[in-house]
Image 1 (tube, one colour):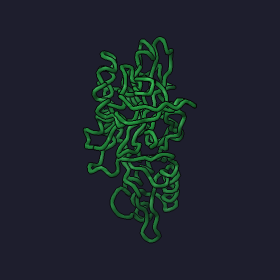
Image 2 (image 1 turned 135 degrees about the vertical axis):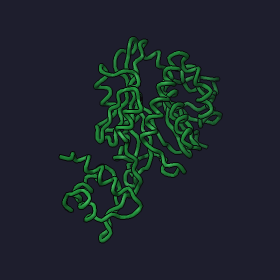
Image 3 (image 1 turned 90 degrees about the vertical axis):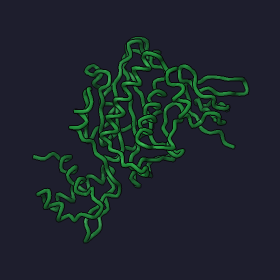
Image 4 (image 1 turned 45 degrees about the vertical axis):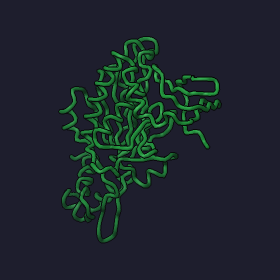
Length: 319
C-alpha cells in the first residue's frame, strides 16, 4: 500500500513540468481514480502547495517545488539524518531526542505544522517550498561556551548561500539573513540541559526558497526568497553543504571562540556604520552600529559612549 505522502509526491513529480496535466492523465499514471486525484490535490492545497486548476486543462504548480532526496542525503552525510514529509517542528523533534543524538545529527522536513521563529513568532512552513532544518550540538561547559554561536550560524548560512551564487545577501544582528534588504532566512537556537554545565543546543534554520502567494499573506514583515536567483538550487545539496559547513564552523568556534568569525561577520553586517535603534522591552536605545564584541553583543556608539548589548531587536533609526 502506498502511503498518502508517497502518492502526493508522485503527483508533484508529474506536475513538475512546465504545462498543465489533466486529472485523467494523473489518474492513469498513478492507477487511481479521478476522485482520489482530486482528494490529494485538495490536501496538498491545505498544506500550502499552490496548484492552478483550470477546467478542461487540468492542474499546474504555481511555484517550483524542490523536495529532499532522502537517499542521497543519508549517503552524503556522516551523521544521522531524520527526514519527514510532515512534522510539528524540526527543533521540537530534536529537543525530544537529545539523549540519543550526536554532534552534527540533523532533522529536515518538508512541512511544519507548528514551525516557530525567534520571540515565539510563527514560521510559515508550506510543504516543499522552503528549507526547514535543525542540527544538534552539545557544549560540555554550558551556555557560556556557546556565547556568540547564533552569529556564527548566520555567518555559515551566508557563506553557503554565497557559494551557490546568491548575491546581495547579509545579516541583521543577531542572526537574521536578508536578501535585497528583505528577510530571507531565520535562525532559532534552543537549549536543553543545564546552563552552567553540559547543555544540548538545537540549531534551527528556515530558508525561504519559493514563497507561495497565499502563504505570503500570513507574513507581517518584508520577505524575500530564492526563486529569483539565476541558478535553481537543489535543496538536497543545500542541506548537505549546510550541515558540513556548520560542523566545520562550530568546531572552529569551540577552539577559538567568536573571535575567529568577527571578520566574516563584519563583511556581512548590513547595519555596520548606520544609525540604528535597539529595542529592549520598553527601553529604546539609539546609536550608530559599530559591529559586535568578542561575545557577539551588538556595539552601539551612543551619546554616552560605546556600549555593548546582548539582547533586544534592532532596526534602522527613523529619519
